[in-house]
Image 1 (cartoon, chains in turn green, brown):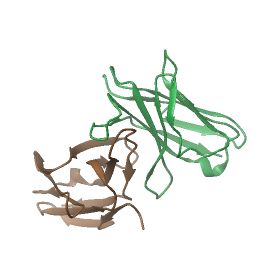
Image 2: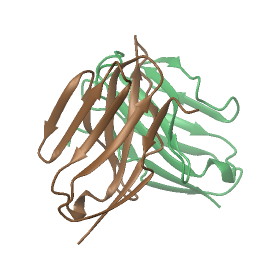
Image 3: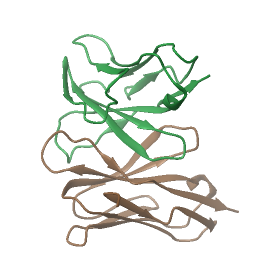
Length: 115
Length: 110
């Protein structure tokens, strides 16, 4: 399956722990987007990365959240010192270019639950 | 006011009915996307369009750029069509982060 792969599918953390969410884009895609879906809310943009570069992080909370997309390996969304309000589904999407008229392919998401 | 508005929020239909979901947006776009999400599931891209009309099986998507409006139609609906349908727009230019509507929850009953 050459689709966007996210892992884990489900992640449970206690308040104060760290959460690491991984996203492997489709083969040949070098553009990665992270979106968050809070319970009973719509999807919201968080961050857009290309290999080794953060292009747009305007949707990322200023504290505790970070993202990277290294030269080798998956993109990582990292949440430090998690709080209950971080409970959400986190989706990754990838595309071949940054053009707005290019399709984005989504992964199955990571459901993060904070105890 | 949200940049992307969908209606209705919830929709119940009987199997076989023709369904229409509407999306209006207030910003300039390069493309509009229709997505499908099953409960607890991932997101599947149904259509991406910047003008006119596209058809795939029982699904049809149309867009009117002048009126900033798009519709998703489902013909001969089936219970397996039950899902949340999400409209999203990609901005003009580069850095194509999507802006999403809040979704339409469709339930098709026998």
